[in-house]
Image 1: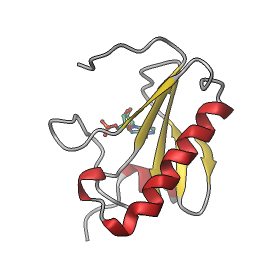
Image 2: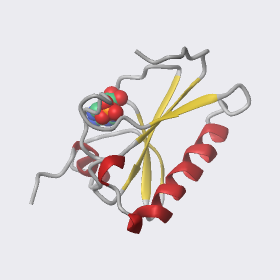
Image 3: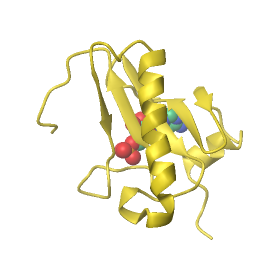
Amino acid sequence: MSEASIFTKIMEGEIPGEILFQDDDCIVLKDISPQAPTHMLVIPRKPIVGVQTASSEDEQLLGHLLVVAQRMAAQEGIANDGYRCVINAGVNGGQQVPHLHIHVLGGRQLQWPPG
Ligand code: AMP
């Protein structure tokens, strides 16, 4: 079996992380290297490598992650001004951690297109 991801290690308490919310299916972590005043990661407990490997079995879970992202944006006070949800997928997508996660960024005007 492949080694547990850094996010799984945080979920299991093996290494520290700032967990803002958790339920049976996911955790929300404060990003260690924030790219905006608010930068959270919504991460399924299930160790899916990325959106590129998710399957139809994961449909409900993927929807849940977005609903949690929406709730967390409201809770953290970035919902009214707007925010961005990002999923990096694979090498060209800039994905560094091979465990699916939704970045939720806000608290400043974000630019488009991304780099
Ligand atoms: P990605 O490039 O989409 O795979 O994003 C990985 C994200 O995980 C980056 O924004 C990192 O700053 C963040 N990250 C890596 N290690 C940790 C950690 N130990 N705690 C919180 N965030 C982390």
